[in-house]
Length: 393
Image 1 (spheres, rainbow, N blue to C red):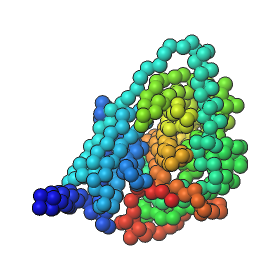
Image 2: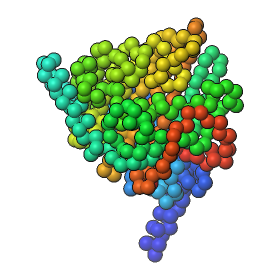
Image 3: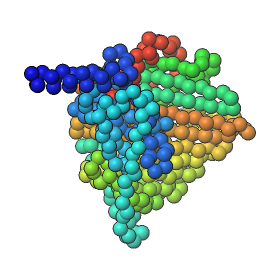
């Protein structure tokens, strides 16, 4: 009798929690924001994973997240992690009835020992060499698909345009650093679904701009700090060590001494510096943040030369790229690009965001060509059901 009573109480308790969640197509929807516990600033691309499953999501540029899970996982734990922060875990039911759930992550870093400048340079140069030599082992080395969510926001004076899309990327070779031309031929993509905050009225509204996302994958693409042949063109210093899910991570700061197209991938680059986060356990890149200033801005992409366009000035760009491990290999989990410039006397701001929602390594979908321009009509039913949570193939 006591056992029956206990079971009834347990079922009632589970039911109470489950009814407290937001419901969406018979799924439980967990919403909130991830912030830095010290600065109160949002943390983009923090990973939220449902333990015991492959379900997960990354916070957006504002630290916000939304994770839909089946009701049967109501009592599972959600692990929240970000490079440079202590990992925390919550029971799914702790999100109950609170769509503005705040997750505060505590920064974790520890200093590095003093080393002479020359010795320091050799240490970090060797570390970058180890990253490159371990790429085939750490990352996908066979053809694959990334399916993901893309958002491009552009604002000027009182005008703001926002385009969201789902994109499928196909890499015919896998993570293999070769020349720019070969990489270009091997990576292709298509747009699947699109929605805008206002109707498309110009050619610019149809530009896909996904090439800027692709070239931000510094492990797959060249013309960045991982190009060993150009290592002498970079000043390397150790910023700190930190922890990520129990592993030690070295943060290396870098500055291009004489930035150019070959070292930074941008024709009009003026300054190029950043920080790269390397897992010391397997020499995988977990995160890269690069800050760029340039003489001009091309709406068709950072690696193209602008012709017959209105001159832009004070062009500033910050690119954050993150990687995550799936089973035994790493994949590109997200890219965040923020840019600003002056068009005459008018300030312009823009942002691009890509989040990988699915990785397909078995029988990937072959895509021919690239979608540089799209005129896809919005499918309202699709967007009403769409969620950017990660799922395995």
